[in-house]
Image (cartoon, rainbow, N blue to C red):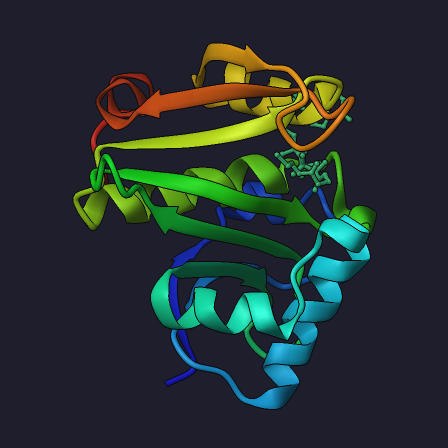
Amino acid sequence: MFLEKVYTLPHKAIKRLDDDVEYLSIYIVQDYNLKLLKSIVDFSLDIFGDAGMDEWGIVPQIRQGNVFILKEENNRKVVGLAILMRGWEDPDQAYLFDFAIAEEYHGRGLGFHFLKGIIENLISQDFKRMGLTVDVDNIGAIKLYEEKLGFELITREDDEYGKGHHRYIMKLEFSEFLDRFGPLKE
Ligand SMILES: CC(C)(COP(=O)(O)OP(=O)(O)OC[C@H]1O[C@@H](n2cnc3c(N)ncnc32)[C@H](O)[C@@H]1OP(=O)(O)O)[C@@H](O)C(=O)NCCC(=O)NCCS
């Protein structure tokens, strides 16, 4: 099996889409064929440009980490991508390495529902927290993480990714996520 479906987005999120998208589900990429791999790589390079991952980055992530995608069941088009890794010093922490929604779907609540669904899956895998870094000027992503999902701003690292690339370090304790959104549904 290439993809394991882990969560279907609530209907109210899909209703906000103009296209005739039936429903969108979150999948864990467990294996790949070259078409699926190409869809994921194209998505990553399209959104992140030089900072995106090619096959040499994505394949080890699929094999060793957790790669989640958001898409329709019978459609190869990737609508969202999230790449995670387990913390070395803190194995209870999932680090969000890449996170994006296709540009034409921005601002419709998909980023929120995608990341919320991923966090719920990670809680069921017994992870205790999520860490991430975000560009200090990425107002939309910061609002999503802080205000919508309850991430805490831990610190600011100047020149983290080279001169002028300043990042906020953020963390979300999953116990606080559960206080905010309630226990996971069976
Ligand atoms: C960041 C990103 C994933 C958000 O996805 P999205 O589907 O557009 O986000 P949502 O529609 O779910 O927005 C959820 C909340 O985030 C905030 N938000 C998202 N985009 C915003 C923007 N451009 N300006 C202000 N707030 C924004 C809002 O609080 C919004 O809630 P609201 O609509 O109730 O006000 C998306 O913009 C993206 O893929 N950006 C490019 C890649 C990137 O920057 N990734 C983050 C790397 S750390």
